[in-house]
Length: 243
Length: 360
Image (cartoon, rainbow over all chains, first blue to last red):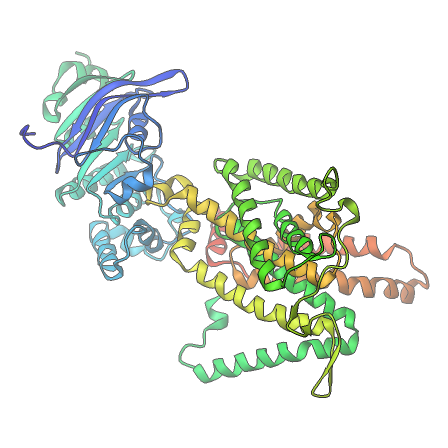
């Protein structure tokens, strides 16, 4: 951040609640254009809730969400997708009955440029060669890791400016987690700005530029990911090491 | 599906096929009238059920929303026609003015049902829609006082038939030496409308709207993440399905000349749903076949079960009406056992079922 331009995404004192339970207690967070930022924290810290607040699945109690220079608090998900803010939902959410190609085509739902959509499908296939081999298979027959790749590829089909990834490593075998994170790096190198929400703190910190640590709905630490990776508090709390 | 109809590269063959089917459909009522005019009437009702099944298929097959009160929209359409073209209020509007009105009002009812149920799925949605269907029926039954809107359980009689200028659909007349009876006139009208409805359904399925419904059916959260306005798309499914039902209801009114709340009971909703499921949810041709089958089979059984018993045992052992429903139920069970995705399954459903049985 050089301070002169506004970040692509900025949460300003965002508070979210389920009924009377405060899940996120007024947090500030920014993601600059081109950055890969991660939000880490334990189970129940409010990570997924934060994401729901950003993309309009949960109304804000107070505070604001600013995106690309506008206040988008309370906007509904489909409007945000049209503006380039796209989420990869937790648990992947691929269309199990559709083939991989059909899933990718569905990702381009908001676009009508047929020829370019075809090219983008091929681009996703170069990014994820495994998907290309199985292009006519139904998504439900894929392994968890492949489904995660498909979910990311499908989100790319809408040509996002900002991609929100919710727990991409959840429920995957260690080898698959490694593969999925490699693709996250590859997507980031293509110039897509990303906010990554992860429980696997070590991996998330290794791939990210900057990081925020969420604890019981509050941000307790923030900074360059590489520095946090060596922060004794983080190491003790999230990387399973004694301080 | 594609394999059955794949005539690409053989256009001549395709046209011969189309011509044969068209000729058969044109000749059908004359053949049936030879057996008995009742069969032409049964065929007309079967086509009406095709409309209903295709309308419900939009809601259940395309958008994946289980609706057990669908017959309510049929009822709304039927009563709109009956009230605006009968001596009940002394209003006699032409049918081409009333049918769109009936469709529009059914559409409003569709949105009325859809709005409070947007967040419901599966069993919960089924229960609410079932309640909705019953509410509409009970209203039709009781809106006879203080102001007599529906004439209660007695229903509405002497409903006008379709009429275009001096050409009435209710009378028999001679055309080019042939006797053109009322059911045969309706048959041609219904057939023409059915063709339009089928084309509309096919176009709808392959449209942007159809893809949005497909996404919602598969996974609603993911559909939202694709930029689909799930709320509007679900309401649109309810509204479109309902308006199909409304049009069918209007035609039913005109053909029967008499309607009462008894025609719009829960069993009818279940029947239409069975047609959709049996034929193949989401497959337009499958649904048409399902509707035809479930319309004809009970009628065929009605005429064969009684005489068959007499021939074998010398007397009627089981009431034909009971036996007919027993056979009918058995046929449904067998069908679901051997072709669970329907007679002509949609490609997606077929793959889904395969995946489940493969244990994947």
